[in-house]
Image 1 (spheres, rainbow, N blue to C red):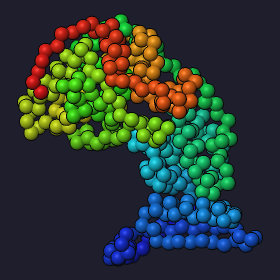
Image 2: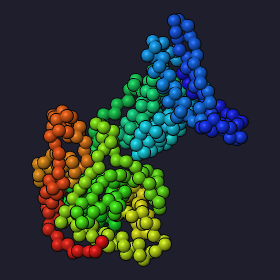
Image 3: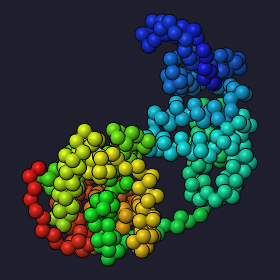
Image 4: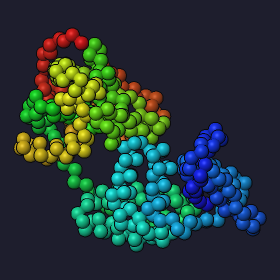
Length: 413
């Protein structure tokens, strides 16, 4: 079975009317076997590849339920580059989170297509994939990065096998071993977190360290947090989105949080603003108002809590890469930016011993919590409900250990 692209001189619109302009349409062809005889099903003229892919999948399921068998209808001219590009647009873009889609796209265009893109899809084998991985390792690429590239290609090729574009998935037969243990730095202790916050005082890093190291927020969650998400009256804030990859940082777009394996949607996270951290939020809001007032029309008001002085969002990869030289200049032990989250989790658990509340603060799914404790999904969801005040107690215990009790001033919001 296959989807073919075709140029037409007068393309139709979705309502069936002619546009009077040339364009591209997509045709679906499915070769199947019934009572020993091969037949071909065809439907032509889909306006986009996604519609064609959906129809192809529906017809495949219909034929399978009727007991008809399929023959592989191979487009012998299709290259790996053509297939991967089609797969990204027809499947990955529409079925994956924006961050996952961006990562898959990066793996495909940065590493896969330059090396194996010209190979015919039907000629791709495990040996060629092993050669790709070995060459990437010889160039100094980390084994975990190569493993993620392999995972991307394996998923794409498994879909090609499911649609019977290829008879088998060559990624399943590679000999490359991806068993290297990642070198994850030890999380910061309470004393180290205290020293780091003191060293970045009154810099743009301060609020990033507070949200990452004291609450365990992820990088893109920090960079997408807005003042609309914060309720100073109730002294709490909501984590409900992340910065979309590749967005215009002068006028940002956001993406949903990581999906929960239970129901496909991760619930919003409500976190308390503790008395120890309140002064940091207050000062950050004052600085936001001052920057907005002083720059006037030159201020890009995305309403962000953490941003540049002109309101432009920080570039996420740059923030991550700049974190290493920051620690070097401060003579602090090396950790990655994401290890601030690990530090928050470790320190909160050591102080409180409350695994469920710490997991709830971090936004872990109930299924993940159940896996660690041996409870079933149903039992976890039924009996574990972490209230805001319990989160506040755990967080205040940690924040007190790092910051001590701070007296905050009152501001008119």
